[in-house]
Image (cartoon, rainbow, N blue to C red; front, side, top):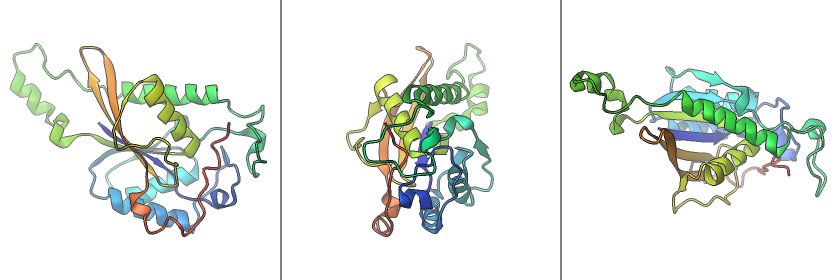
Length: 236
């Protein structure tokens, strides 16, 4: 499977440096323009599935992309929501200020991201490639959609801090490989893309994966300086 993890488009709170967390803020005009650029970039993909955080900034970003994929249903899941930042939400963070006591801790966020990713991967384990049954041709015909030429492609639209946490999970805990061309220190700008290719090993009963891009904003090259972008919710 090839997974496209996407950060939502820009909001007015992003521009102002206001912490959003679970605060439900819509895209601004620039964020919709970014999302339309993303949609154009992804329009030729054969999207098998699409997931998004239920917060409107992520949901709307996904909906804009899916205008080019009318047959793809959008699935919402609380496990993809941004980190909750409690009493810090709705205001600017003071210089050097850390997350308040009523915020979702980094450990709690990691647990939530891990639980969602485990659930997601568990529900996408492919059938064994070679069954013991002699009806090989029947089997291959039934599962021909799983061949390399028709790789399952899935989009997941989430948030900056959530995606940074996921990046840590798959690189440091799950030990997925990282492409030589990937710079994991690249900022996670609005509508940036992380692509991860995953493959299930039936012999070892585990998923292997490789990060093939991170922070990719190729679709925004001529827009980067039009508006200020901040990864406002990435609070320690």
